Amino acid sequence: MATLAEGARRYGAIIRASEPVRTIRAPSRGVELHTDQGVYSADRLILSAGSWMRPLLRQLDLDLPLTVQKEQIAFFRARDPAAFMPGRLPLVIHRFPKTTSLGSVFPIFDHAGVKVMIDRTGPEVAPDDPDRSIELPLLERLRAYATELLPGLSGEIIEAVSCRYTMTPDEHFIIDRHPAHPQIVIASPCSGHGFKFGAVIGRVLADLALRGATTYDIARFRLDRPALAGG
Image (cartoon, rainbow, N blue to C red; front, side, top):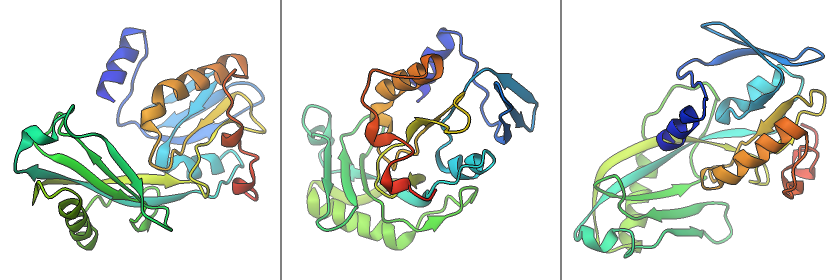
């Protein structure tokens, strides 16, 4: 994300970190954002707010059936780190049978340990819940999973991190324009698997914001799909 942010700055983007949006207004034309530091006006808005998406969209009379889950990952020490480097260890993603949970393993990269996670298992939390503590029972399950799957891991946890997944009922993305305010493009929530598609999603969002349409097939990500009915 730091690399992408720096690339955006080189092309003229202004990034205002740690400045949450409190209020969104959509008059007949354009948009207006209120933060703790000021008011911003624009012709168009791409709203990609992750776990804060649902409360922000409620201000625009759109309530989507989104849930926020507190997930966690851990980095494990390897007995032979060379065996877990890119080129030796592939990226592993698999779905546990008869569940929506995924197990994932990432080779050592920019860290001393092997990244392992079991997602879609964390408790549901409020979008603005500041708690980033680690759920110890989930961490122990993750340790057992990691060492059984990869005997080369020692079981020693170098670092454990909490993160948020904002889930749609069918796990698909949301990429569409607001039905009443077409100047607002809605992106995500990505149900925990959106970042790897970030480059092409960014292109789609630019298309929708600038031209109102895209050549990419985004039918399954529309707001009017059955999984979001009633939202």
